[in-house]
Amino acid sequence: MSNEAPSKLDKWREKYAALVVALACLYGVIDSWSSNWILTGILSLGVLICGTIGVFDIKRAIYNRKK
Image 1 (cartoon, rainbow, N blue to C red):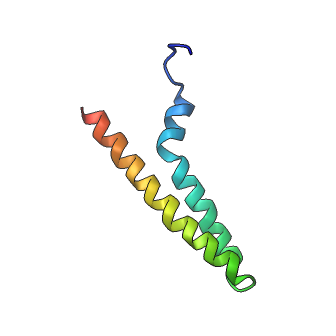
Image 2: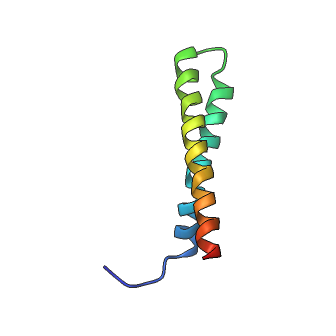
Image 3: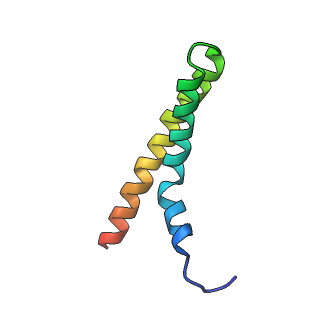
């Protein structure tokens, strides 16, 4: 274990990775809307869950920055 400070990429990934996954799921939902309803349902759940996690990650980062 090293005591190095996290890189900018690690900091960005910590805040925004879940939102990027949610956007990718949203693209999949739009792409598979009329052809595969099971995949559309699974990806829609991914949008909701990952989007919620992403919003709370950003709120936590803002709260920790103020401290």
